[in-house]
Amino acid sequence: MLEITNTTKQKINKKQAVTLVDYVLHFYKKESKEVSLVVIGDKKMHSLNYQFRGVDKTTDVLSFSGDKNNSDFLGEIFINIQEAGRTAKYIEMFGAKKSATYIFNFLLVHGLLHLLGYDDKTEKGRQAMIILGDKFLNGFFQKKVL
Picture 1 (cartoon, helix red, strand yellow):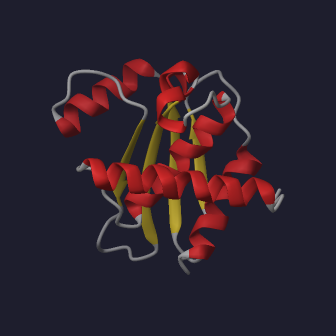
Picture 2 (cartoon, one colour):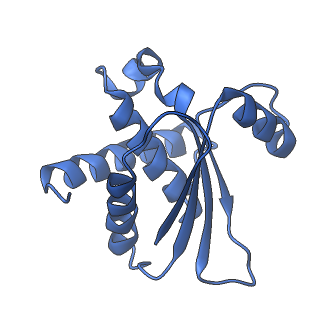
Picture 3 (cartoon, helix red, strand yellow):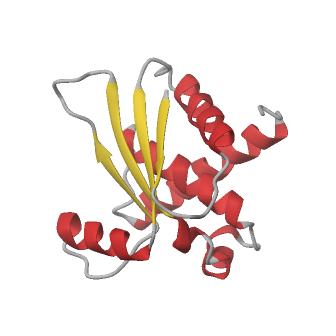
């Protein structure tokens, strides 16, 4: 289950986000887990990145694991919608230009993978998460889950 809070004026496809999260959680047999998504802009993301990681710049996605006392709550994902719109930044990552919607969905899956235990602190882990996120999105859209 996905709860969405959009603090920006930019519209997101909430139905698509919910269905995508359900798709990934189903794959990992975590359908009963709850996830929170907060859509924010550069300024708030910069603040969170500095507060929780000590990094004095904005980023595209942050994930925070849920409360250990609430086993149903997997965690919270923050996506910087402005960063997702900077599509040229992602060309090298994907080997081709992708739409802002694709990048937003990729960041959602990426954040979810972090909540499920994946780590991108090493280049090998980062590449594995990129490939896995891309595979989830390709499967999601090819199966026309929506």
